[in-house]
Image 1 (cartoon, rainbow over the protein chains, first blue to last red):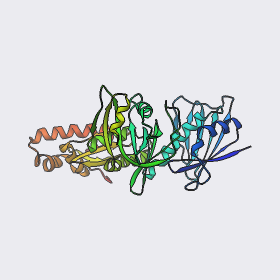
Image 2: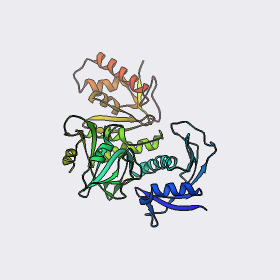
Image 3: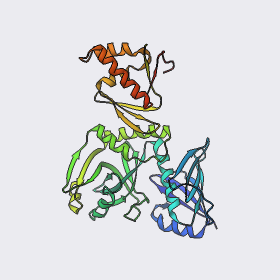
Image 4: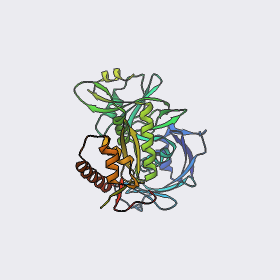
Length: 265
Length: 96
């Protein structure tokens, strides 16, 4: 029996239609706090089909290609078609796991956010005292470490992929179910984004505000765009500039102890 | 031979503190132009010869010898063209 569930991340609801019972269970566990019966707007539609016969072909790195009226996302474990004109798509994935669907959702959400002034950033993020803080950097720079060191009054939105978009004239960070080594989906809340920290591990904690040009550089290097679509690239370029106008970007060199969070205010 | 230069359409650009920050949208590579390069970039309308741009926008504003300034400008334009963010031609570039 086909199960329909609405998954809303960063204010973008997607109706998932799944006919495989094992996948229904895996997805139900993984995304439970992101399902809703009251989406903020009309959901996009994505049907997910499971194959167990190796019918999906592709490379380890996702191939993303525009074919005139739809996108193709393809990897060794999934093949997806996405029709932006109708807001519908279909995934065929190898095995009843959440990982292939998770990858498709990351690509899809980043592409939907870009033309609407938002972005998905390779960053951990957390809410503390009513404000959101994002921690970005290359893999190994300390995103998951910052999440693990967070004090009890900080709510982790994600340790890997942050959803950021404009709301009423300011940028807000949203929880996402997209996780890194932390292993737990982020808490499904949002808050105005106060600062972005470029993480570097070091012997002591040093916080340095960056000028606008360096800030734009940091944002552009860490905003996710899985394909090289010129229009989306241009949109994200301007998003980075607008974000640098209203969100302070710092370079945070930190020693991995809880004391680093004393600087996050 | 005259050189004409025009901004590529495959870029996104913003000015900051008198310098241009330009992204090639084909590969998302960022370039920051210094003050002299920014003057040349801003004057790259496809119809003004580079020699005139150098004379009016570089030599008039910066202390530099015309021959040196032109040679440097030509080298800069060729490098920017190689990266796809500037178009160069020995004839005026229409529809730039």
